[in-house]
Image (tube, rainbow, N blue to C red):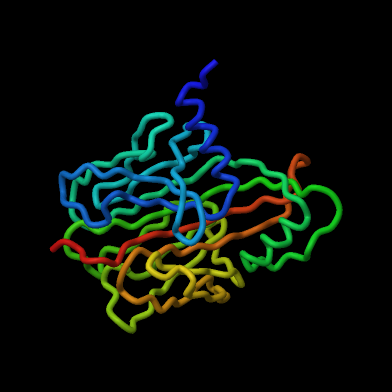
Length: 258
């Protein structure tokens, strides 16, 4: 019996969530007012990713915030792009996707490698399978019209959240991008924050957050950037050993329409 396309799309979605980074990739990072923009979800590594179709069971929040307020990013189940938004006004648009928790089991070897890869200050484990619950906290910044220093990223209230404290579309050569990382609305210190560019993803920019949760990242003002961080805590529920939160922030510093 043939498997319906919708079921296949959702199965791909759930499998994809277990792997690597997850980020938001709008079809256009510099649209015009009145445009309809597809909002793709991607899962992969080094900004090469597979589609993550829309699965309502996984969506806790899928929103866009602009000068007019907070609005849902709408879409159809199993769709890729996972959502669509209408550009109503000029300014910086903040897209956010916050998932419900998912579960995965890892061998100690894979779990320990993951600790190393993500720079997590957790001791290696031994023994049987490691049970983990994880949540995605992804954001993306879209600039409509001229970029101004007054239009900045906004906090969306995600459990783990990266917030650009300066509009990245105003960056000039040699300038740093200040970013703050929060966990449960409080600064998270000592976390590894990684920035990579699609043009050369192997040349990563990294920093550990200070006591105020802040890092300063020297990014060349060109191309698609992904900033990411992971936070791992001991689980408080019997069905899991650990709970992780994965934050990401994307923006494209190519030419912005004037």
